[in-house]
Length: 204
Image (cartoon, rainbow, N blue to C red):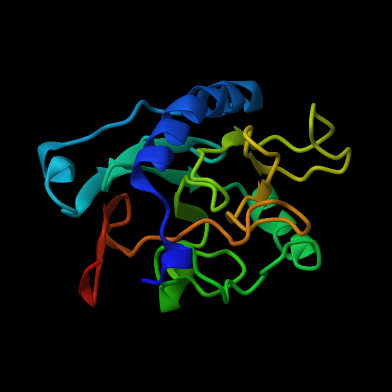
């Protein structure tokens, strides 16, 4: 990994802690369900994969778990949310996820949904802004809201410097964040059980 892709861990940790509260408030505003971080003993180990039951995540809701000390968002998108993504293609800076932040983009997520095609409604992304390592707030509901455009289609807002991301974690143009949010390696063990940090190629 080049120096440009590395974020000072101490600064990132402080920023994540500072901004995390804003993220929880944002989700509450959007009417979505957010669980608290759910670190397991496995997650606390050095980079160990994390198994997650997503059966309790209803359409339009989001669960937050921890992997490698970072928040990972699991959002079950509604048909309306999915339909909004093609409309953002000309508005986001990297619609095809050609640039990386800290993790290589999994081949199976190189699509407009940034998800496995067989479960395109489920977004799994590391909830870290690529600008200074803050954790964005969820602004899932469409429509005019403070600090967002009137034609907002739903997504995420970084409270630190105003970067905005769509419901696939793609950063909008002319924002401080230089890249989309990372998609970690993940795979399905069953329709409602996933493992983060591992896929068919092995652990990240």
